[in-house]
Length: 264
Ligand code: KIV
Ligand code: NA
Image 1 (spheres, protein in one colour):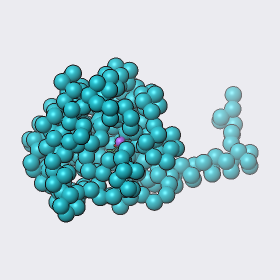
Image 2 (cartoon, helix red, strand yellow; image 1 turned 60 degrees about the horizontal axis):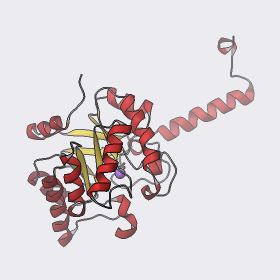
Image 3 (spheres, protein in one colour; image 1 turned 180 degrees about the vertical axis):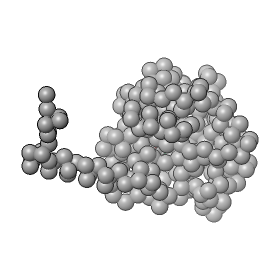
Image 4 (tube, helix red, strand yellow; image 1 turned 30 degrees about the horizontal axis):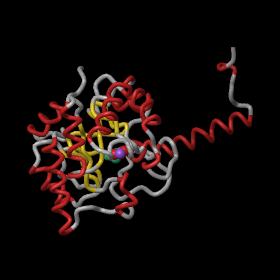
């Protein structure tokens, strides 16, 4: 019943066992996912869109993410909790990355951090891991670079595959314990998964990665509006919550709620 460690994830890959990962930003989801046996929870900077209502992840800050990290850590017993370093908190170089990473470990209480980029952030990954902070890398489509990339686009098609593969090797050599592959062709993800000793975590990267991650609101159908093609909704929470809300409102308006049993 102890916490999952990064070495457990490496061992799972060696045994050929796949594992699921979800985002979480609050007490109830963290507790439910932990009880359901999700070994890794990510307090993603996707809280920008899924908690704070920003249009993109670029806007969210360390001060906005850290309380969510603390909430998820407090609400889990087993999951390894990863704190996502927001845009602007590590790009300046290893010194800035280390300062932010230490803040997330100390104030957030998370067990690892994640940052976006391949070759270009290898020095940051080396500095963090050198200081004892486990790092999850994130390559392929990197949402914090949405404006430079020119939208939500699959990365690593055709000749561009070499770049994704070089990024994967760079983050592994720099010491990352796992790497997220976002929106890359299935064939590229498969090759990276075979070439690396560390686990690959796919999102829109096909079926051949060692793990799969989804934003929890996408997984549970709480998202309103069109989801990307790589999402599968396993429930209709938006529908269920809408129904519950309308039922409550109707009963208040009609005087059905509260009834005698709810009254002191
Ligand atoms: O912030 C996030 O939700 C992520 C995952 C989807 C990998 O980075
Ligand atoms: Na993220």
